[in-house]
Image (cartoon, rainbow, N blue to C red; front, top):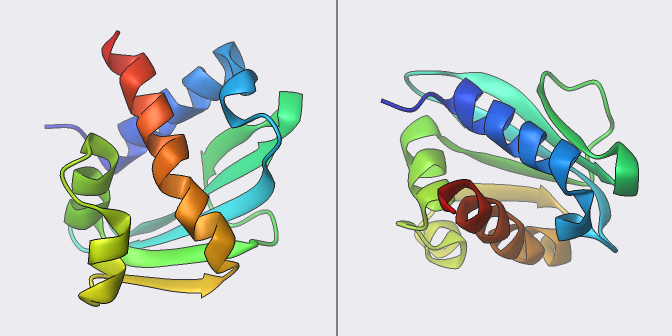
Length: 115
């Protein structure tokens, strides 16, 4: 079973290998995850210095609060972020425009990890 920690490690590796996938997006996403693997992670997008890590070292532009199960489903493409938000399974604080871009970021990472 894939852990949340391993998902963020894979995202971090993908960002190190090809930061071009998030070109033009300067933002800090924070994920407050609850449930089996409760934790806080950040996706820090700063061009060549982009990374993903556990904790809340940076000031976030967009914070997403959801269960670890729903997060895994969203990363796998089995849960639409907009539907999750509308049904109350995803709570967003901060920049909504960034939240909308997140689905594209996760799917570009996801497609790369499966190729």
